[in-house]
Image 1 (cartoon, rainbow, N blue to C red):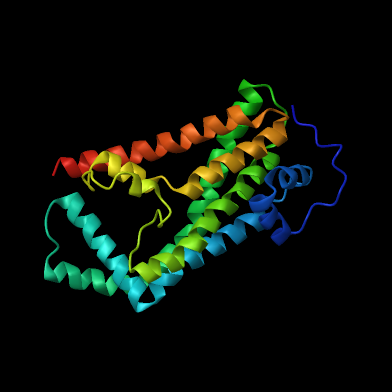
Image 2 (cartoon, rainbow, N blue to C red):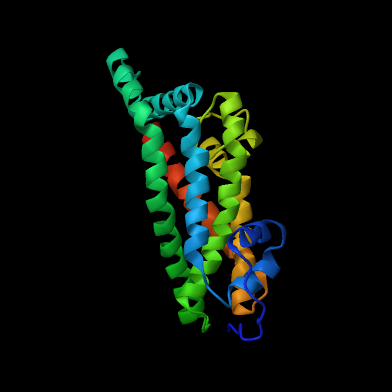
Length: 245
């Protein structure tokens, strides 16, 4: 059950909430579930993610890195080398890639946050008998995205300095499998699992535990399994497609 009537303190401001999710998640979640406000934090997350992921592509080095990553991905999918004409066309489109990435994040992030919040709400309320509102669940899930935004923000300068580009960023588990086939399922899976993705699942689990007055460990384990399962589903599918070429 969710009972937030005992929380009487004024909810912290936007930036205080964002910082609180990083340094003191449990206390911050206790403060925000009483007055659900997901819109502002979602906008902040989208803005940070857009600047972190699209901003580097506004530079020459970032555009080259993104272009090379796109070329490698296309060659893996098709099993054929990108022709000079194709490369020129992709090079022309790279100038607009940053704006496409930045704009799409303002659609993708809210959509996925609302979708998973609806699934969480249905499970905890219908299956487990909780009574939290959808707005409270959405607030918890939206605030947990601060961790993902932090990962993108810290990863952007690293990728610029390294001259590399990937959606997962540099803080992934790919280094755990240095000797395996880089196009294989295991390498793709580890490369897609990020430290901040794991942290975000843990943070969300803490928030859901606070909201529903449940011990967070079981929830955290469940959310971690969901994160790893979805990542495995996409990477194994990608590996199968590439392996078939």
